[in-house]
Image 1 (cartoon, rainbow, N blue to C red):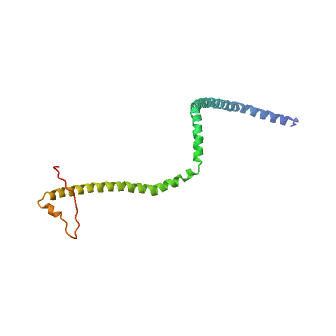
Image 2 (image 1 turned 120 degrees about the horizontal axis):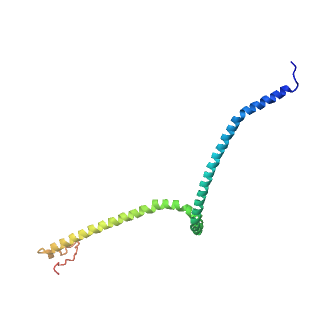
Image 3 (image 1 turned 90 degrees about the vertical axis):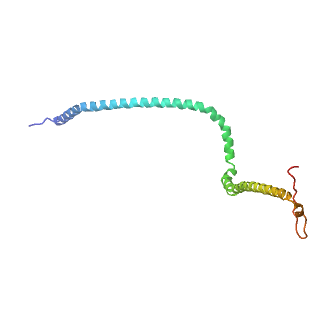
Length: 166
């Protein structure tokens, strides 16, 4: 059989075209699915942009509300920054440790001393009351005046006795 020149290439082209046409419905179907997904993505992007827009409006309203107080705080914050830059601020922790280690124990001791002095004062008051009562009792005894005489080589304790009736 004789072949016509170029027929093989024409048949190859027709076959390729037929295969391409056969695949066209699946390509159209895939393209249609991709377009639908693109539409879904565009819809979600619109929702996201709407949410971002609402959030931006809220943030803008909050920023407007806070702007004036923040501006009012600025001078104080600048002064605070100057104070905090002072080298003395770096010494505060050491100073606090020294106060805790040295001053607080002294203050506790002073508080304890105050309690002890108050206790001693109370005890002294009770002792003085007892001495006064004893002196009155002794003064009321017959011959108590003889006890007050001084003997050579002894020390005499003089207490003033007051009569409770005076």
